[in-house]
Image 1 (spheres, rainbow, N blue to C red):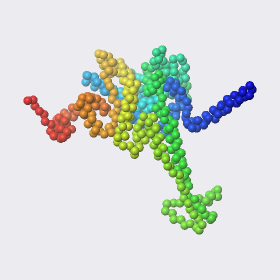
Image 2: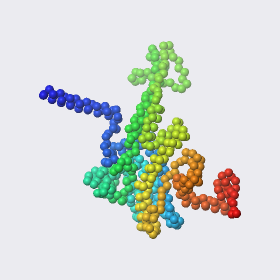
Image 3: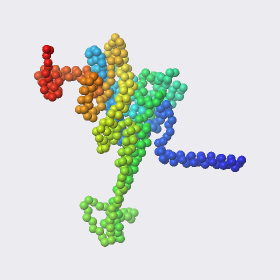
Image 4: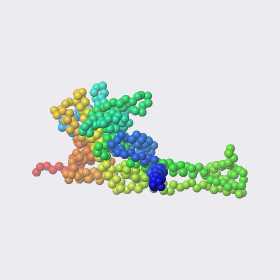
Length: 466
């Protein structure tokens, strides 16, 4: 009995020791960043992940390029407002008031509304989320304040509060617990305010039903970005170390090649370009052979392709490398990338642009800057759409010809075609009409005027009624 007990305990002890020994080995194999974070999307965001991602974006050229490519394609110069109001006067008044407000939308006065879009998209990519708080100026006009993720207090513990978000009995967000100033301010004691959800927008991309907080888009490839950066640094250090030694001198003399004697008794000699050096009898000179970087390019490209795949970006956009990219492969990659960006753009419109416009209209009507229509504020809200920035055409001639054929075949309207280019059809028609009227007034016939000239350059023949 005692022998069995001793063997059992001894076996358990060996298993514990073996497990303790395997843990560091496993961590060495899969990296020190393999920190298990269960249910990250249903709990408070891990500050360690946020800090590491921000470090990578600030110090890794690949991460910085990925963020910039994401912002440029998602927002670009801005997602613009396209009103579809029947009354030209009301439409013009709405656009004039809106355009004037976009210049002063930022509560800090640093950027305009479209700059806030770019900054919100950037933080949504890096931190996984961004919060927008509604405020007003002294005249009652809307102002927007962007709050990074650390402004949300995650220490409040209640049954209906999770990760700084308060829920009602139906599971809807009803409030956020927000620090009044940055929690990293060591000169002021932290103060937390409960802000109703009607005053705050949480912008993130849910990937799991019931997700509470956002997760960085760089999370799946953080380790690879770090490993690639370390590999690049190690290769550079290797080359620098190899380049420190130029050559080795074998000589029986005390003063080889006119070398100088250092304090430690060693002899060092330097060579300059164009030097002709005579060797004494018995002296020989051998040059060092610096280590090669064979396989560096292939490994780096492989890692960049994996990183690009994890981010949903084409390899050539992430790396800027077009050496192995053909027109066909680049076009196929852009098609898939456009699908990804289109989905994100309309989600961004739903979570950011539309709620901001609705609050702005309500406040503008209340302070008398916009008239109250028969159907109330809802008429403004239902009569607008949003135009994301148009994707650059890879082959403009073919794509425009295909668009024209689709319009002629009844597969798409002119409004759809113009909207895909990021413009408003009414504004385009108005500009074309104004241009034609100006040309007619001075008697100019332009080759681009289909009323006067065909595509072949011949005068247009207008047939009369028979």
